[in-house]
Amino acid sequence: MRVPVYIVLLLVVAVVGLVWWQGTLTYDFTTPPTEAKLAQVRAEAARDFSPASPQDAPKRAAVDGQAPNDEGAAEAPKEPEIDLGNIETAPGLEAYAVDSPKGSDHLVKLATALEAKGAFQRALLAWERVLDHGSTDPVNYAAALASVKRLRPTLPAWNIDPEGAIPVVIHAGTGPATATALKPELEAAAREIGAASEGILAVTVDIAVGKKSPNPTGPAPVALWLSGSAKEAPATDALSFTVDNPANLRKQVLSTIYSLVGGQLKRKTAYVALPELSEDENPADALHHRVTRLCWRELGAGLNLTPPPPPAPAPPAREAAQPAPRSNRSGANKPSTPQPPRATPAAPRANPAPTTAPNRRQGR
Image (cartoon, rainbow, N blue to C red):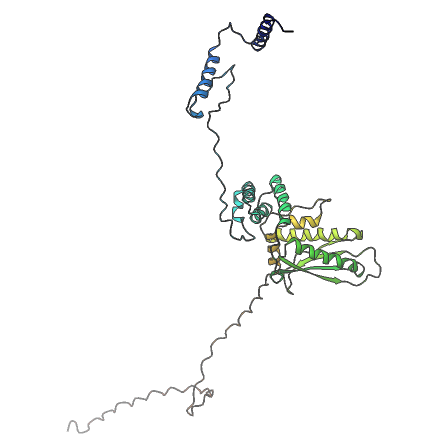
């Protein structure tokens, strides 16, 4: 059955009219547009159909007292690119320390740019400069610490030559009962420091065991300090603790070593001080990531400085010069016998002038 043509035409007209009515329901065709609306339409038409650049397009007028977004406005100037230098050469441990006066924000951007270039060893050094040279900004410090934890396991150790490691000794003093359990923990701590420094330090252990107390009131305290390998090498301050629970002995040893390292660096260097450990923080993780490789090297070098020689004794006072002895006639230098003073000869007496006798014949 075919639909009549007039019904089809009516349906087409109805559909078109309904769509047109729905689309123009909110439009006002009787009220003329305002000047502001006309200016906006002209600006949009000039921007869309003009061959000129968007920066040359006229600005859109304000509508209802609000300034529209001007897409043709000049964009904000971009920050200059960071000079990365020659990233093909091998860096030193102190790399990018010269950039520290520019602030931790600059160091963070520098490290990020180096990672983008694929220079991961240099990027790790730049992140470490945020930790030991940057400010104490918690946001930048947290970002640097997370980056160090992410990059260090992916890179080889810095020093792979055991002969080039700096010797450091962990000294301990305690009683005989505690020394047995303390020795393996100190040896494990020595290996931990060697791994944390990436082979820069070679650590050994020296335990001094005291005499057993006849009346012990508790476990003997443990004193720890670090020094160089020489007999008169410099040393850190000594810190002590008491072993209340043998299960916590390793954590106490590592926490004390972390405090010794932080105190020595604070006294002898100008690096940023190490933050204190929280109660739930792993001290081994802090030794690996909070202490940079540059700080490990400076610690070892400072503990192995040669002590200055003792001052030389003052020279003896010079005695007054003695006159040389007089030579005698025989030529031997014998001391001459003092002679009595010679008497001065008396002046000769003047004879009186002869008196002329009277001439008796005078008058004759």
